[in-house]
Length: 232
Image (cartoon, rainbow, N blue to C red; front, side, top):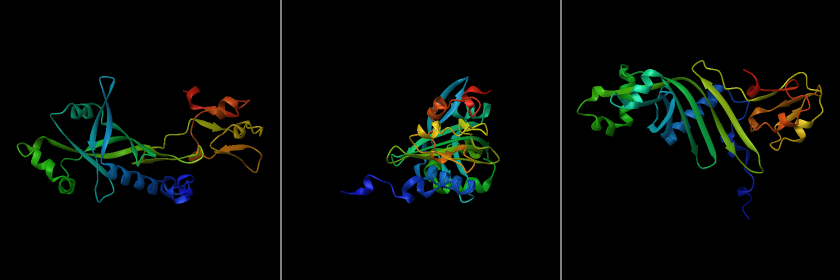
């Protein structure tokens, strides 16, 4: 029997990323994956309603992600009204990748234009009748998450941010009012909750499913453990 099918080696779990990696290293890996997938479902808002389409993303030598659209498309109109997108996809059938980003029109940047269309010569041909209708965008700032579901009911996730944005906080947090009863740890399937030297418990968020079971079991939920779902 191939035991590799049963237990992931450490380097296979979320590409070896841990909470010791810098935010820059995590962002670089996320962008690399977007470039690998390239064609990703991309959501915007249109008159208060969600819309989605598949967009081709390219990682250029400056380490940033870019995409293009046409001024004649509803997508362009939506970006003019609210230049925010959400990408979400799976990678290799066992990873999930999500990025929420604010984008910037960089069509007038000649370097971006030249580098982008080196990778997309067919797009230039497609719009040859009116290249001026093409618009290039850069993912200027955002936040996101890489998520890996692996063996024995364990997960691994890494949240990240770039361009000056803050990482999205996890929903549940154990506070200094923890009395050390251990109910949260006893009910955490992912083994994400640990006891500190002071007897109080804490959550290692890279192992946390953010499911809320610990919160439902905490006898002092709301004080010893808080939930963003119940705070403004």
